[in-house]
Amino acid sequence: MLTYTTLDEAAAALGRNLTFSETLWLNYSANKSDYYLYCHNILFLFLIFSIVPLPVVLIELMRLAGFDKYKIQPKVKLSWSEMLKCYKDVMKMFFFIVGPLQLVSYPSIKMIGIRTSLPLPSGWEIFLQLLVYFLVEDYTNYWIHRFLHGKWGYEKIHSVHHEYAAPIGFAAPYAHWAEILILGIPSFLGPAIVPGHMITFWLWIALRQIEAIETHSGYDFPWTPTKYIPFYGGADYHDYHHYVGGQSQSNFASVFTYCDFIYGTDKGYRFQKKVIKKLKEGLENGGNQNGGSYYDSTQDLKSD
Image 1 (cartoon, rainbow, N blue to C red):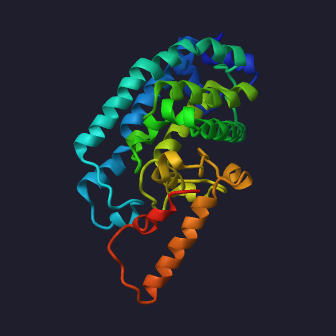
Image 2 (image 1 turned 180 degrees about the vertical axis):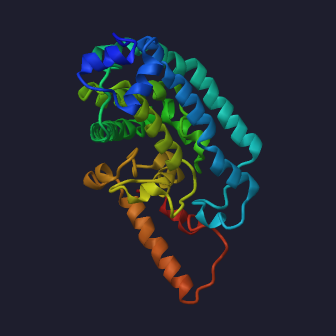
Image 3 (image 1 turned 30 degrees about the vertical axis):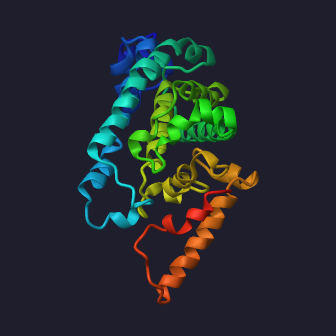
């Protein structure tokens, strides 16, 4: 909670007039506890899990003309009932695991120094902190993900997430309760290393989940803005990981691809892309297309 409640008090404390965004923040947060502000994440996550996947879900259900060519595994079509079941399962985990975890994790947020006070961080400060959060989470998540593809980790925990061999947006947070708890650790490491403002923390949690939904969408749209981010994996990259399934020792990256490249865990994916390129060149040179997805043409590549 802020130690001042009026613009004059805030301006006196800062030694200057408040910016427009700082005025909005003061008016909204002055009489709210830090715990109440932190718990906004529960609402944000609920809205993200419920709304962000909807555009692609509608494309999938309505079979909109012109979009099938962007579907990564075009032969896999999920019905509305199957998608609704996935969403219900995610919501059960949200209300019984994710939500309560947010409620009880507040002391750790206070301990690492997430603040709600003025002044607000600059745009560059927010950007650089978010970059650190993504890099720290990505590197840590890579190794946890590799562990979860070991025999014990996959059979006991991670196989739940891989029930969707052709992922959909609603399935991004679909996982075993233990996986949700384990992968919550990398999400807190970045803010623990470089503590920031509560607004930055909100943005971090929201953007990480939106990114996960995008990479699980099942569609590789050429106009996606994330294609301009260096070393970004994206939907096609992660879709291959789900396609290979439990055998997969490839494409463990959650966001960026540099760990897979450095540690050699993208060889299966890169080999498959070379085969696909040759197949497409053959078709363009007069070959006859058999009507299936290029994944169907590379069924024997389910190994890394």
